[in-house]
Amino acid sequence: MLKDQDGQGSFVEALMGHAEERYRQDWLSKVNSLVDWKPIEKRLLRHYAKDEGRPAIHPLIMFKALLLAEWHTLSDRELSRSLEYRYDFRRFTGLPFETVAPDDTTFVVFRKRILGDWKRLMEMVTRQLSSAGYKVHEAISVDATLVEAHSKPKRRDDGESEGGDSDGSWRGFPVKKSEDDQGNEVISRRMALFGYKVNLAATVGTGFIADASVCKASEHETHHLMEFVRDETKVVYADKGYVGNRAEVQRQGIRDGIHEKASRGHPLTKKALARNSRITKKRRIVEGVFGSLKQWYAWRKTRFMGLARNQLAIALTAVAWNLKKWAVLELAQARA
Image (tube, rainbow, N blue to C red):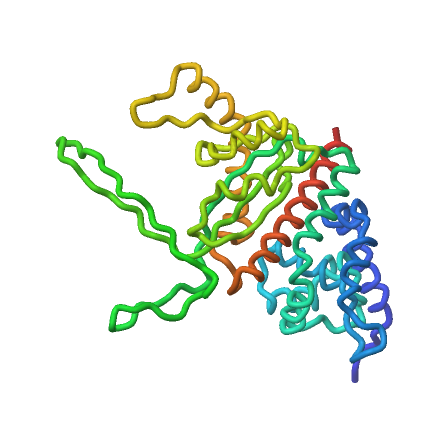
């Protein structure tokens, strides 16, 4: 004979009430309340027909789910499973508790739909940050980092290469000469990397990602500095690799925070070295952002094949990074 189950409903209600209380105290809930999701929702809805095909899961739910995947470094399959069982995931996305979570293939299709919106989605979030009083583009630090491709070419028996990510490219490194402890000349060379280069502009002071893009590893980063400049940009900091942009930066009336670069027969003066040292204190914030992206957001290696998919991937990472930082800063100010 089965025991009477009276009271089980109240237990579930109490459990859910406890989960709701914890959720409201979490930074995830703060993100939901800070962001005006309506313009993002409007943009996403453009990719869906109202009267055609089977009913789809709302695109804003899908977009928020991809942000959760960024924050928790989840694969599509892991994201689907987490949405099925985690209370905070459902509350954040707005996925009804009676609805089955989307499967991994649904996320693949959704990414394909919004592939061309990567730039617009980033701008929507940075615009809201600016409205909240954060001067995202006013003072920026620009740098680039190499990221290994999801798949690199394999060498055949005849010496030719095949396969790999067709949009990736090799980046070689120059030979370096040095001396060992016995005074012998040593020639060292870092291994070449096949993959992409992530170009990024970080906000000096707060560490928001003002802008980001992906290019082939073989492209030089100096070609991507000016694409991060906005009308409100007042100063740009960068290392000596961007010295070719100094004239254009100055021409646009932007304060030049690019490192001086020595040349053969013309070493840097003490004044130039002191200037570089002052710039480094402002510029290094972008290196901290790169370190965090590689450690916590899995950007040591690309997760997708092709330049377009990885452009969207860095945009989603940038949006997730900025929203979490925004929420954390607001919570810190509230406690102060």
